[in-house]
Amino acid sequence: MVLLFIKAKKHFIKDSPDYDIEDFFNYPYSDKLSLDSEHFITLEGQVVAIADEIAQRAHDIDDAFKSGKINHDTFYKLCDFRSKPELIEIDKEIKKDMNKSENGNLLIDYNDMYRAQLCSKIISYFIDDVVNTFKSNRHPELFNQKEHKWTKKVIHFSETAMRINDILDNMIKQLVLNSAEISRFDQTASDIITELFKYYYSNPLSLGDGTLRRLFKEMSKHTDNCICLRGSDIELVREEIDKIIKADLTEKNLDNKNEYIVKRKLLARCIADHISGMTDTFAINEYRDIKGITKTF
Image (cartoon, rainbow, N blue to C red; front, side, top):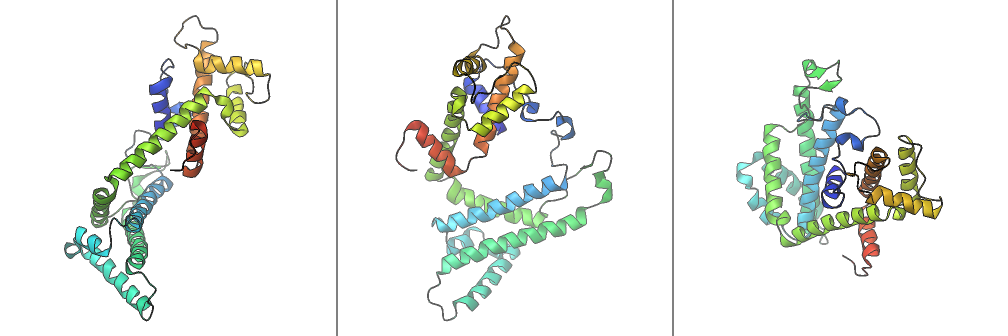
């Protein structure tokens, strides 16, 4: 959401003052978040981060197999199993399980079964590694009781697991992420998000009722001079929208200048929240509706 917000500021909210990280919060506690820390200060944050890394690695491998970019043979070769005992062990376990399942069953696709087993084994390997690593890292002196935060990253891969993760990550980048079709898709996704933000910013009434009610609620915390953009007199609504999105906020003599600086920030934040809550399919369909596109991606 923050990157989307910055992109919008850079491209078409140029006369607005610079935004601060607190513009994204409903509470003034950014000083408690240790934003300058190189690691998450809570165990929950560290767990979420490593879980996302593990899930992403398995997801990448799954996609690579399903798309036909790799199969068992290419995977075995690229990962250089001979020098990676951990991967050799995973491969042996998979083949042992597969031999049991394949016995007498001619309908099983070898690569498809290997893919499913590999993703499962990789996830299990990383989870076990993280748990065991944490057991040796959880020293009481690393926890700052007064500020209720961990002064060091304690939820992470061991050195061995990190090497395995890097191997898998580099393999995926080499075979999949650097491909022309992925590059085109990434650019398409970026274009869709940017266009959605521009559209909603220029047409706030296109936002859902819930988002507009939230916008009114947030604005009313800062000023009594605000109206709900949904259900109020249309002429007043249009006038208010023009001031929020079009007024030159660098003009020194502008009436209620600070008030509209806040309103513009709140509108941008609500739009960013709205888009960040969309599924891929919903965002694509919204983009198609906006652009009048009938074909599917």
